[in-house]
Length: 302
Image 1 (spheres, one colour):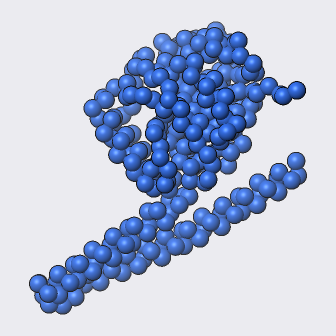
Image 2: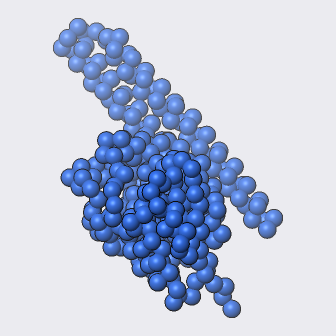
């Protein structure tokens, strides 16, 4: 007889008293009739409203933090406390309907991670969010080498045993879900994308356009440097070399008729970046080999 799946549903919450009760009730309504065992973990990330009181009155496990550290930090706590190896995540603001989770969970045997793809942006400051997210997503697709329909969706299902290997790279802030997706893609794990409904959030958004967009870009670059540094350093090296050669020819034939110090600096910089990228690639390859060896050894011990 096939063993029932045990699903740990993680919900980070910060001042979500208006919506969190509905989200918990909706999860029970959706999962009650299904053939799953499940738990709901709500991580209250230092809320100053009645979020904890609402959760305490519901059938869910409350993990209360004294101070607000970010939704990434809350998600990491939830992952570490989760009992199931299959983890589902969604936000506490009613922007995602738990009715879409079973469809993602049903396909987790075929994938290592399943992401819900939102059909349209419903967040605040849409005129800023849409172009910023498009640019960041295209940058992530180029650097990771994978098509990514939705880079920072808050609804996802994944295998805990895999993500635990990369928990160290997940930041504490909004870009945590982006880091999770890229960590899987950059390390050869399969990631599926399934369309879901997305709604206007209930309550005030915590999104800060300038700061959070800068963090998203920083996160994408950082993850790629961690796992595939050649994708950044090689184009940078080639670009600088070409600029140096063109500038040298221009200076020699049209300006001072000799190679300038700035030409030498640019060309040497290209070689320096190439060497850094090569060394970084070797370090990453060695680290991955060590990780796979440890995982294989632990699997044999079991």
